[in-house]
Image 1 (cartoon, helix red, strand yellow):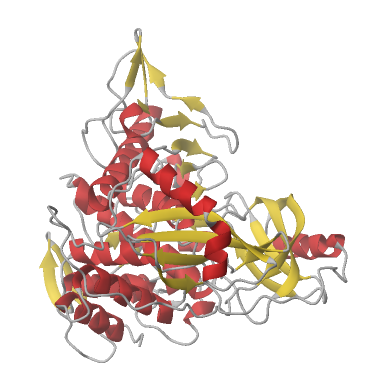
Image 2 (tube, rainbow, N blue to C red):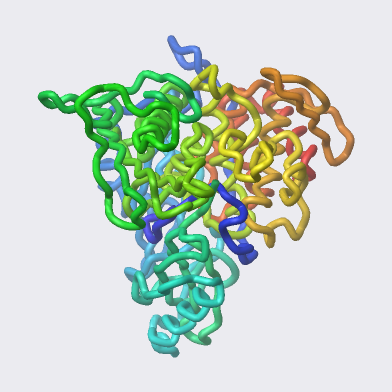
Length: 546
């Protein structure tokens, strides 16, 4: 998410209440030039390049030094200031710098934007989460902060939260993500959701009228000798005669045992030999091995596929916690601790530590540190779909014979109890709730169901429509208009989605603007007249996004 909020993401649709629909602003996109080949590389010139820590720090420092000039160049008002969040550099030298915004020192929710500059430093365009002009008559609230807090606590209790308490006192913000920008309060309520998942309910209240403007759940739910991936090689650390699940080759990732607690870091897995788990859930280290392997595979996928060094792209690892709570049927990513947490499933017998779940959850961290897609409405569906898409990419990239890549989500963890997957990408409605196609009401659905539109798009873009068997799994993907879509392959589809996520999506991106963003990404990577561009158009048409 953006710097203003903390997010948990989990993979289970059943674990959260239906999300409130958000009225999201359009994203202004700038057309890109036809790409030129990147010298000496097999990748398009517009593909993001791997940045060393020093190079990334240098780009961020340059952006920081030029804040006033940039604000002037893009036409911000005198009361507005930019805050540097992230930076991406393409092989051709183009730099995409992501900013948050303040107004008279107050955070602007929905004020994020991306400035695209050429290798020479010339501004080429701006992608904005909101096109609204910031001009507030007053910064003095008409209602007290206590009123906003009371409203937020009431909403949390209505949603079944246990032990609801103010996690963050109401803070004054400018709400600009939908409609006319207004002075508002943002309150964060902690506690636990009804299934035991930690709660971070964000409530935005109009500071003049007391009306609720927006709400979203910051905890986004989801669904060695490992349980799911067989015998794998793990990178561990040795100190004397003791070994720990510490991976110093991937940013220092550590795996901890919560021993059924719901707070704290837990105890670092440590033992006197370097063989972890026995493939059975009765051995606590088995889930630890799965989690460590999932983190390892996810790190390698992002590094090898996109040149991204860790979730924040700064070379620093998150950490993982297993055995959360008692019979907790979920897993979640939490920005506030920068950590990944897994429950042990029904009767503590099916840990949610499968490879695609690990990739899904940690990809929420990537989204949080790039586009920051709000976890409600259509942007929330895109957030969830991004994790399904990247989790699928992790599973294919790992090339593990015990858990081969497929376009099924959570097929190993048997959440449904009948051996069926949690979600299907070729025809999302097969899960009984997900949307195959866009409708005007899709933003009002649970984000795990509205994500079906983007998941279906990604499958069509990768593999095309119709019946086919891939890796021994049968698929049959329809299109809304009955058209035939020819896929461009998963590798190119992943590059297009990641490029759009990191260079064109903002916190308020909806499906119409996701289409624009992926078309801009396809133009950058492959050219406006390319087969890849036309395939993106066809795949979006196939899910009724125009």
